[in-house]
Image (tube, rainbow, N blue to C red; front, side, top):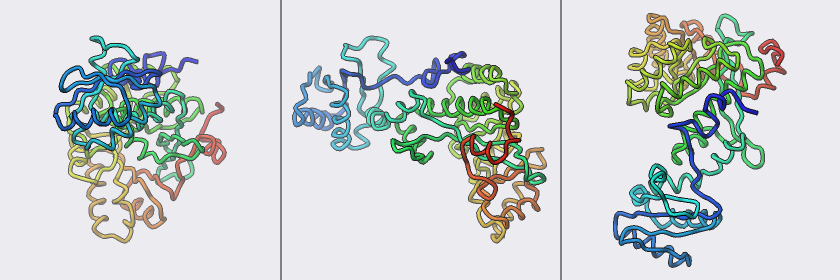
Length: 372
């Protein structure tokens, strides 16, 4: 069945122009290596000799070899053990399905470290392509009404071969190393809104996104908006939550993203405010609808006077700008009471609920959802 995102050109792994991930390994894979230094080139050719791999030396810096899929995986492990990270970064690799490369293959050339990490992280691509991803939700409550969630934060989850949840930080770290973060971020957004729509959730849905995972706001976000509309969700109920705020360097790019979201009727939130000066700069520059206080500030805030001073000032700054404050990571009643008294608007954390699949939330509080 075609999903709303696929209908608008955003299938799980093939968002045109930016979020397409081509396979690196085929049944029969031809690999082309360009190695800039003699020492690294000697390491590569000696490895092939030791492994009995036939290779063709095209010149004194470039070789070609042909491997099966299983041989390729073993070769990558050996390559990783024979070259330093610095050497791998300077190697250029192209893979084809046994054929000589053509002009259209130029865009598929990757650095050696990306090649190695993508092979090592191929399980992520396989799970995404097979639809083996889930969205779990964690409720966000208004401090004035702790019975009915104000909204839900959507969180990506994947399972290992035994059905256990893989730590999300590990998934995103491997995806980043393998240069497929664009696709993982896309599938997280798509699955979040599609799962909520299917469950019939009523309320605000906080959807994480990394600004660096959107190449072209005019294209990628337009199709996102169209897909969300097809799902029957109101743009005003979708809050796009900007993550990795401390790594944002291209302010103009982020402005373009946020301007598009706002014109389309969506709301925006900044995550981890208080973790560094960059977050305060973003608060001043973008004036989001919501800010989330950094979890480290929340921990033991009821007994830490230094954290209390920081949080009071952050809340005052946000209030002056008409921004709602979400206290994230609340684990104790003492933390909750201090934050409520100090003026935080919304509460999220293990004290209230852990992230869980939709079915769990439906069992606990059916009134959170319409009949699906």
